[in-house]
Image (cartoon, rainbow over all chains, first blue to last red; front, side, top):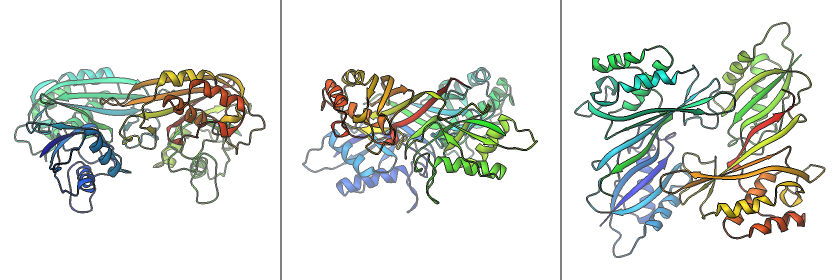
Length: 258
Length: 258
């Protein structure tokens, strides 16, 4: 039995998220499990670092699974090529397939996750990247958003910023990074605003609720300090809205064990 | 009668190119003309700087048209918003709508065009940007491609690098820029290779034929000097293949007249 670690890129549009659903509902997990089956005729369950929601993308999702390939040898390169061939034409690509020890666990071994959230801030909707950014027409003040973001850094009770459906036992999390970058998107003054969000783990909808709230700050609807007041209320109804999944990317998952 | 200049972004996938086709075949031109009709109930023909082929994208296509809006006033902002509203949910966005004088002509007034061609160079196919890059698995040597590209700069007979269906009277063109940049695409060693190609005008398939040839150089199938030998042959059969439209973007069109 060999444990394999996969690093996966996918477009979340068109999938009901990572997690396998009822028959006939497409999920990223199902698509990859089907590709494994097509390759070796084994029904294997794969375990991901994080179960991304419908419409959320990944540029570095990590998953693991155990494969009994008998006495035959299977190289990392051959598995990568085979899975990618079976995944075509779906918008899912295996970037790396690596043999790991049984101590490796994609979900429980993760020590850090990096998310990126992309806002397209201009008058015109997204065309080429429709579904891959959150289109916000009103002008956003990035400095104000950065001020608001500071209040979220560190260890807090994030009840205000987690989904009311969140299954996690504790609402306490530690946010290690929330950087906001801005860059030109086109030659007509359109801008892209990127949030880089990092921590060991996140609550359900936490990133999207934080970004949805900071957008209110950027638009001048909230003061930066309101982010803190809401946080301290420990009440979801005091937080800003959940923004669309389109702009969210799981970028990287880190492990102590390789 | 007011002449309008539009700057347009679109995803070429799903369209039979810019130019209006027979009934029922989607084109970018038709989609925009339909949006104008929905806005003002006038059937108006728009004229683009360049008729991009099926699957080719634009981040800065330019077009113009004349609109008789009677005695009512129409602001640039209102026209932009109206056209974008009528274009939804198609992957076409008007980035700018500007009143210009009748001396302005999107096609005949263009003094310079910038194209970008994007290659995704890694083991795994494109997922999030499928249809938006050319996926090349074999390792490409960018320095060799740059050496080959030098031979194409300047004024030449580009018969070798134009489509045999090209309608242009003369095969003589001046290539002002062919820069190749390389940047990381993912954290697993995947790279993006970008060609920036600039000149007053181009022959049919010229950019894709040049990039398709330089890819052979990067792969070590051609020597850099072979690009020159092929150019001098003035024979399409001596050139490299036409690469896919997926990676091609019309980035910008410049004019003397605003």
